[in-house]
Length: 162
Image (cartoon, rainbow, N blue to C red; front, side, top):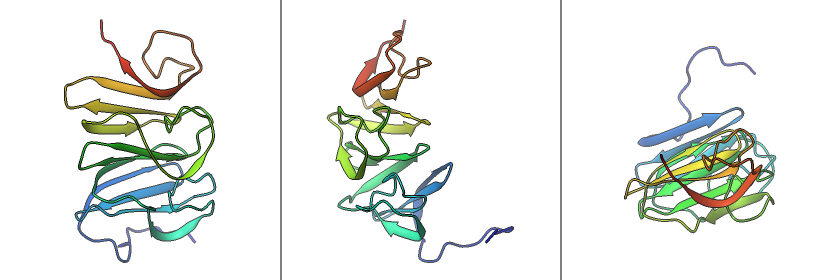
């Protein structure tokens, strides 16, 4: 079914952060609850399943979220305590857990004290409170900013600026 005019998503009110890329979307409520919907076949909805959802579902075991960012088939969230969580397709290391294995539940990154996050197509970034930038995931075109030709950076790595 095509929707040609904007529609209110039932049950989603008091939203403070949203993100969408390709075929799934995410929204954070003011109480820190994170909802996702759309394509979930690669675990990017974070609800411990690999299936599509046509209405918003709560992300499993994740509370106090303040921001969300979606990649093409992964999702990252920033909690109010500054921790970064990621899940979904991980073929290029974009969830930062040291593997290239997908996950349908959130994984807590080993970086903290974060102020902002951003998900690219197959990589992720985080901005720490001290102003440093960290990146991980696919690096075929230098997305991780490490001036190397490494295809995959599987854990967060600080970007240095010249």
